[in-house]
Image (cartoon, rainbow, N blue to C red; front, side):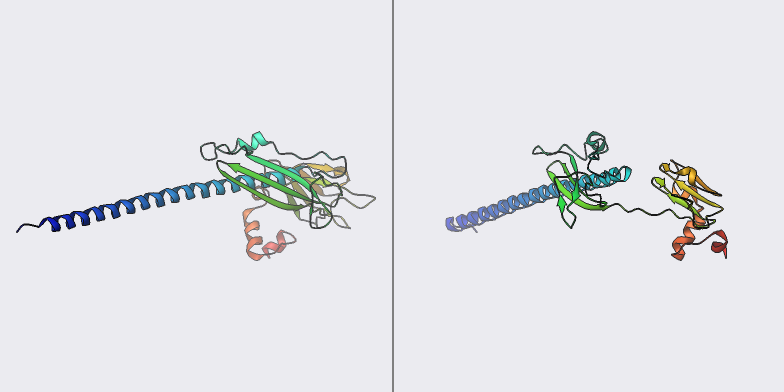
Length: 246
C-alpha cells in the first residue's frame, strides 16, 4: 500500500514538529544546566568569601587579645594583610574581582551605648569595648562580618594546692601586704602556668606559689587527661587532687 502525497506531507510535518520540540527541550536543558553551574559557582564564591571574612574577624580578635589599644594615645591595631592572604591557596581562593581587597579588617571604638564610633579606632573611652569589622573577597564573592568585643579582666586568686593555667598572658599586680597570687591567708602550694608571658609584680608572689611560662604547652600538657575528663564529665571543678579522687 502506498501513502498518498497528503499523508506523506502530514507525516513529514509531524516529524519536523517532534524534532523542533526536542531541539527546544535540549536548549532549555542546556540553559538550565548552565544556570545551575553559574549559580553553584556564585554560591561557592560567596561561601569562600564569608570564610575569608570570618578568618579576618578571628585574626582581629587575636590582635586585640595580644595588645588591647587603650586610651587616647594608643596605637591603632592592624592585621598583617600579606601574611593573612598567604595562608589561603590561590587555586581555591583566587584574587577578588571588581577591585576589591582580599581582606580588610577595621577596628572601631564603641559610642558608649550599643553603637559604633567609626571615627575612633582604639578604645578611647577606656570602657573595654570595641567593634571589629572584617570584609573578605575572593573571585566574584564578597562578604562582611562584624563582632562586638569586650575585654574582661579577672583577679588572679589561686587556692591552696590548685594549679591555674592560662592560654594567654598573665599580668600579676598587687599592693600592700596582700599577696598577688593566692587568698588571705595566701596559698602555700600552688602553681600558675601561662602559655603566653608572665609580667607585672612577679616578685610579689609569696610563699609556695610558683609561676612558670610554657610557650609551647597546651592545657593537656599541663594537667593529666584523667583530671580533665573527670572535670568535663562531672561538670564541676575540684579543690585538689584528694577531692578529685575521693
